[in-house]
Image 1: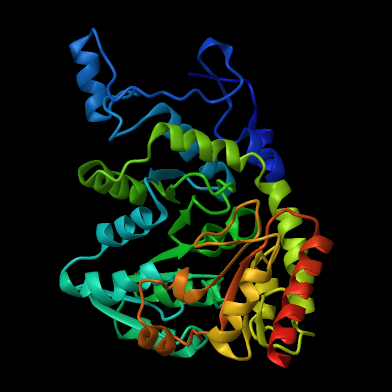
Image 2: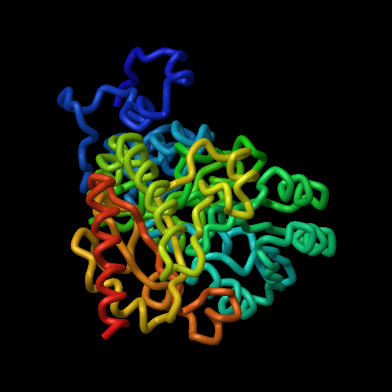
Length: 406
């Protein structure tokens, strides 16, 4: 594919423009206006020497789709444009991206520092799989930056951050912890799934590698799995090699679906987080709600940090209801404009308790130890009209009250 004549001014383009044109400053085959889906598993060469040079990486081209694919490469280039990264590598799921980047840089005798408030699947890697490899894992209280810094100084090869956290929406001071990690030469990895590149740019804050579950907001339609890692080429080349050998490659059709989804990311996020703010503010007034987690609320303990490192507060809200799971079981079935499902980031609003969504892999005891109440509900706010979502939530709470009053 030949590059189009879009000049360096593209670097100054707005985020909405980059979601559309990022990675697509090329003339596609047959003058197609959209990225073609290249479904071929292998690519043929008449010149054996050229084939060999491509295989060695000394010439551009494709050999086998486990190693690289034109459609997948277009997606990787689009993420680079959004995250201002040198390079990116795509995976078959978000967990494939997270696990692969950790397994690339951690091995027997190394030490990783992270926080307790990570996604349940990530937490399982820390608690179950990495210790089997002889990796020392230390998980700190998420809000205790001093404790995290102390553990970094004690010894740290990789610092893994997730901010905002899933599902408690805690905010980690990226710059502060990057500084501590750099003082001991640790690699810093950040999961930017909840914030998206539109609201947070971890690489600009000193992070080395950024991870996304592309299944979520990037694709935005709940119909495809994918994961991405981006950062400096020197690091990404190592992650790409791990993917090539271990095989968690993204399918070209899935890559195309994510590319198509990203093109409306700015429009979706604009509506979703505007509604999320209104929903969070309403939840503060609801007597059945014990607490609300949303970084856009001034009442949020990490609101000042969020204002410092984020340009928007995202589309995820979580809250804890009085009465725990008994209340949750009554509340959720009353909702009309929502799926009760284990996903997030889609155009439709999605509700779910942690025990069946973010931390389904964890036992009740493990969830409680992580500070995740059985009464916690996560909302992934969709693109529906804000008033419709608010009225739906209000009538659901009214139904709970009617049942409780008998």
